[in-house]
Length: 112
Length: 392
Image (cartoon, rainbow over all chains, first blue to last red; front, side, top):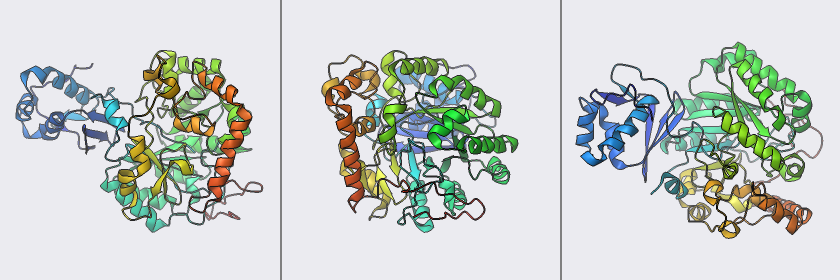
């Protein structure tokens, strides 16, 4: 689990190349540049990711989304993963490159 | 609930959708999933294709995998992918390389949301051409050189693993690395013309074990998540490792028919047509077939197997087209249970039944003619004009 480089004391935003699609379990994120797909598995995490930029730092975004102290650690781990894959980035600076949860290719894709 | 459970209940839209744009093809690969060759006269028009793209954009389908047939055989192909990208629907298209000229390669290198995938089924002309036809190796290699020369990085070279090329994986990896391309290998399915070639081409049990070891050692090789049945051998492979048919993926064929997955072009897996009221979105949301696929499945004969959570019973289409029950083992079950089932039931009789099912479906006017193979020799596709000669 990569946490290096992720600093929840800073302001982040969803990368501009990332689209968010609501799903019953939360949301699907797709990065058009890296072709990487990510799954946000709770509604609160979706709120956090989509409102990051409105808050001065990640902690404030977590508070505003109603994430409890007991849940905080797992949310920070998830956000660190999203930062490592470039899905979220610090404002005014490009993020690094690493492996997120899902493979770039999805299930059952065909070929002629 | 675990993510995989959510996914088996289906998503608001496919994660990834395969769209076969035409059944026309200059080749006649013996394992073609869509049994392509002749253009279907009922093919979606340019305007209808654009309407499908509009709908995919509204549903936020992030990208489509375009294939065929040979998709570049359509005269409106390049315009359609430009249109898709303009609507922010990414495109990955599969081609045998015929029309990837130096000029086209340069234009593709400049694009942002278009990925090119060249199909190749062997590291040598001998192995490749036995499956894909004479000259196809040369055509594919020329396309790869054109893409590499144009500075098109990270294009994909897509291999269907067979008994004859599984020993060439290292050479294929070296080929991809040499071009700065990504290697993608996928599973041979007994679908389309594969009904007739699968017996001779599918990897042996020992080759499957080798393949699994190789994939575990090469986590950067793409697989389209197609080898999840090998998970029962031990180490899991990267990816979602589940059958996404009708839940996470589906297929739109050239006449607009929507099937549960790219390996199941058969009336039994036909969910609807994009030309019907409500279009593709209504098919995805309301089809009875998809609703059924999204319900919990019976584990049938696999219920007592300790490996079920790893392989989930394997591939529905592989079972169907080899005549095996859908709630039993995959024909390539790594424990040998599928092979035993095939032998017990009499492989020949089952294959004949599979063919009959195909023929019956082909004759029913309701479905797209399932087999678009040409009745006589190969039909050349002329590069300059983009016109198919004698495609009927």
